[in-house]
Length: 301
Image (cartoon, rainbow, N blue to C red):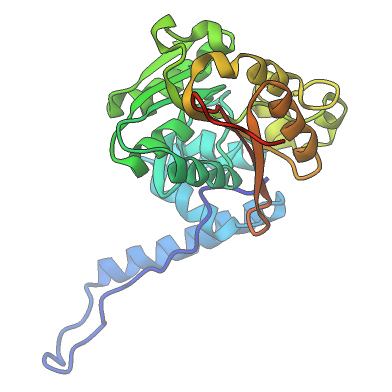
């Protein structure tokens, strides 16, 4: 699984001397501390690399930055070596350029899902009513809010652990998080008024769960991964209720796989929505968009 935290970093150190002040030298304790940090980072990176971490150097620095004392750092390195997702250890994920809170037991937002948010930002207008369904950490809705500048944001999830985490990302932006099964969690007043419905619902077929990386399979909630026999069971339920909750001209955006996209589009078409598919090969991201027609609008299939 590609980590949303791992980004190349450049460390800019002050010049050791100046042509204007040739006698100025770095303080010995500063040099010593810098060398100690380099040595410590290299040692941690070696440990992580041996455990199979692809971005070991970046991860080592992130763990060093997050730890408050040596004992905590040792514990965090051991957790990572044993396969705990880096985001669960440091407590955040880099999503759409913002640090989003992520807690243990909560689905980690993937970088590919940034494509869904960008597609939604192309559709939505500032002040739109946005619902992040199956919200997990609430990162999708929070990121869309930031891109729009403002919106009426609601998020919902069936998992109480996810709801608790989502509140950390959604409520500071003026949004509300609701607990429950899909639409049953939402306030009735939103029926027929949602402009953008985001749904990164689980779409992994049940039989494929054992083949997922241990980080996801062992440390993320099954309910956030398992999409049923063909992976589209939750998508079908979302599609069936979408037309009742979307405002005229509103859109439902669901992440799916490139292989599942044709069937995902058929599901939306069958629910009375006009479906299109968008993809980003670089991110390995595929999104199906279903739009509710406006009164008097004719849709050709």
